[in-house]
Amino acid sequence: MTTKTSVPRSSKKQTEAIVKEVQEQNRMTTGRWLKEIGWRHLVGIIVIIYCLVPLLYVLSASLKPNSNLTGSNKLFQEVSFANYAALSGTDYWHWITNSLIISSITAIGTVLMASAAAYAFSRYRFKGREATLTFLLLVQMFPQMLAFVALFLLLLALKDVFPVLGLNSQLGLIFVYLGGALGSNTFLMYGFFKTVPLEIDEAARIDGASHAQIFWGIIMRLVTPVLAVVGLLSFITSFGDFVIAKVVLQTPDKFTLAVGMYNWAADARTAPWGLFAAGAVVAAIPVIILFQFLQRYIVSGLTAGGVKG
Image (cartoon, rainbow, N blue to C red; front, side, top):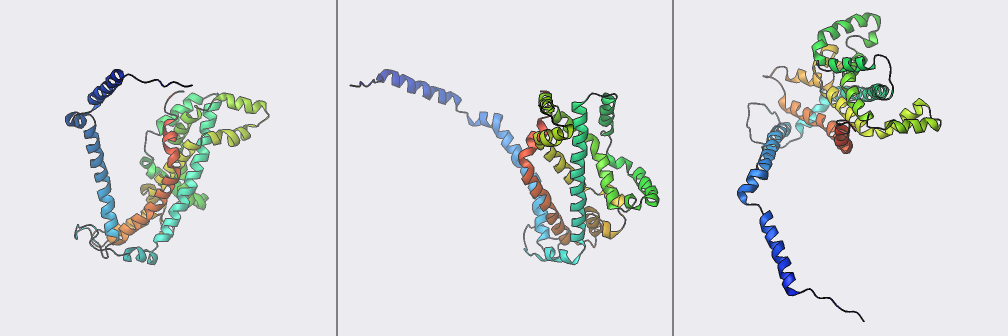
């Protein structure tokens, strides 16, 4: 036979009163909410508007036939896909293909080179290790575009010896990108590689694994987030680069998208701004797709090597 335990009414009322009192204390007044939280929402809304207005303006210009920068500022006053259709009559698709090929090879090469260098610096102790790391840190302080005169003269001289690597060579441009990205990406990967315990290498070595098997089969799988981040940043940087590409590439058949579209907008009075805007919208699609595909790795890849573990 079971007996039911009943809670006294007095204690129940006391509990409800305490809960109500706590809720009243935690409830923010309007002034307090604006002071502590509300201003952050306001700043966020302002930043979102600041970022969206130019994007909406470009999208609106791409959908307006014969669009120009001095015409009506009303967004989406006319909607037509004539500018997108007109891209087929230009070298646009050839330029974007060149950019995708160059950026993809640069991203893959950067990941492989930087990961190999970061693995060596994080796992081995050799003479000149600290000096080399310091040198890489100093080199990355100077933008690559500061050396574009030296790059031009170097590629001009190489053209006589190795035409495939000389001026007006897409392979030469890829090598320039790879050299410029090695320092900063090595440091970014170095911090992440340091978070992988050395005991994993030692255990694999005891089981008979070689250095190549440890690197490709174990370490590279554990550092996937930072590989994705470095690949994404390298792809975006080379895809949107203009200065170095303009110096290296000389003929329209070798142009990347940034250099080719620059020729459209070189003369502001006669530039086909509607066509230019349509090209800019289409060019953003590969980057957006790649970003969405790799976004789950981005936060962990950027922050995991930022603290000493």
